[in-house]
Length: 443
Image (cartoon, rainbow, N blue to C red; front, side, top):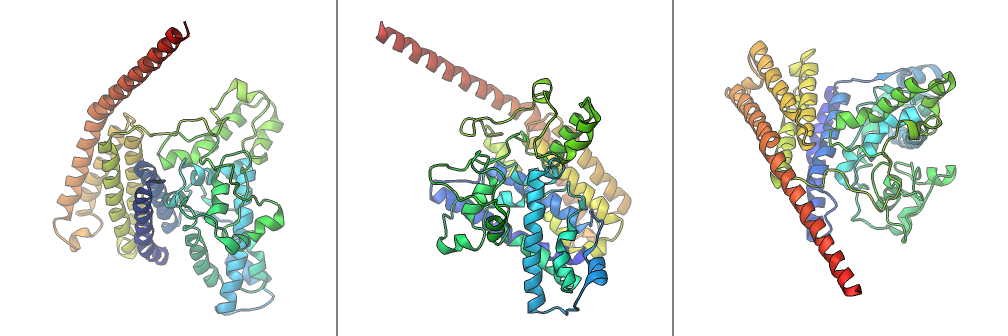
């Protein structure tokens, strides 16, 4: 846990800097592909995932270390060769676990969050799951275990392999010549994230594109079919916690409502999106039919809400950095209390971004939780040892955040809605006047 936290302390500012550079470049090229509020939601998702991983909140039913001890034909020490073998085997493992996540109903739940952004940018690479609480695909690492690759090598290579998938989540890099035949490029991954019928469930590879070519899931980006991004059943929320469990909730409901036991049992393992006969009519769920004709979620926001969301996510990153840098000092079970506070923070901030009236409740709950923590422990998880005014700073921030949430819910959201309604009325009137003029011209 502590070692991974230290890695993330280095990785987080690098990722954030690249996200900012992409944003500035997009503005400069008059092709901004990273709306701020969408990026905030993506970073929020990355935070929940990293906190889950650092706290070790997942179960592996079949550990790699056990496999090595039982089936290894050779014994290897960490070396260049062992790292190369590990990298290729992990990429093979990544291809199949990724493909299963797209093609099997139950496994889609843990992966839908990654595709939930209706944009395509570096920030959306951070949309990683918290719903993946169990690792079921360790058996795919059997080739490395047979060759005796040490567990320590796998543990180091796995996060490196994940971080190397960050760079190709962008629309600003076009096709890369001969590299298109070797590695996964932005062009390949745009296809993967697209909901166009031509592109669905293609290009599952993570580093080397030849897995898709070998196993029949490759699709080139077509010049005459611009990729449209998102998921066909849109999330309609910025809240990463909700997105993580939307598909699972639908599966549970459909399994409960199914009239025959075969459907109740097999729905989990059917192709992604499958529902019992007539369920689309009986229990309709909105699905995008025309990928070139739908309204993106959350595009109408006041600048105040957008800028406050950015400020909130930057402050949250400070809280997270302190946790990752002081895991050993904070210790058990306090790190789980801290992790719970981060989860409440993300949930509260996201509810505000969704313009939910419940944002006040969640922000109040966060404030009360912090007061309880400081009252019980005497300070914010040892932060007083760094500077003695930390309690006042933390509580002042949380009180201010609570008051600002009240302002947005009671004033800003209503004002913004009224302006939207007025704009819609004006647009409708304009359209009616144009129609009347056309009728007069015709007569």
